[in-house]
Image 1: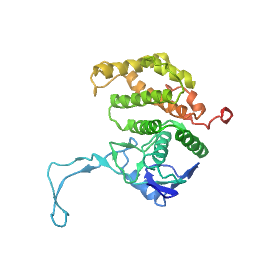
Image 2: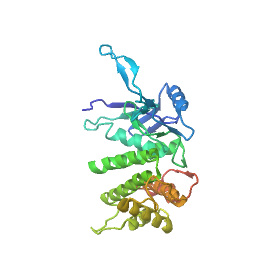
Image 3: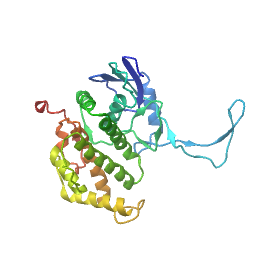
Image 4: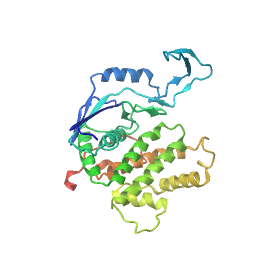
Length: 312
């Protein structure tokens, strides 16, 4: 049980030098932020990702356990790797049944991962695969908006039941992990998983009622977009559903084999699906930012504006 009224954890790496204050907590810059940033920049690939380091097996002294010699032909990229922390998350208020790393703390760092288009993790947890350091979310915002978004979202999220809260945390986590996959079909599967999860969550939250009828996948996108006033492009929806059906039911990616090169249109649909999810996430949280109503098939930068408080 957590008995402290102030729960602290380090996490990273987030390239952001402002303090974020929200209802129930604070995200502060660590004193050694610049050292962590220098380490990240030293190993950062030109594509904006940190890749797993190369590792090898060694024979060790049985007494001291110090490595003696490298075992030949054992070098490979690490399955898991760590990145130095950049920030500290402080949650205030006493709640004995709140496991910070599974509940509120996880929600905050994965929501920040969504907002900044990166992957964040507690300092002593591991990453797998490559990790995006540069933003993969084409939005700009003010720090005041970040604070308002976190404050409003965590209050709303806490009103959900246990399964709904857990599901949303997992969906945020998988959404942040999507850019780490090398192949487009892999990212597509993950982003469609996220979409399907958000759709089911919206129904669980009572945002709509299917009346126990089975809703086709194409109709799911149309329904959820209409509910949240998200623009719709029927041609692109059809293409996304075609890619999904062929891949899930026939292991066909864009008319060919997974891990083969697809068309430019398929490449764009993967981006589109991710950008659709990026609008659905604040919509599910009832954070009424005008960003939700921007076209998810446009490739330019958008402004993530504060919510419309008149709608409260």
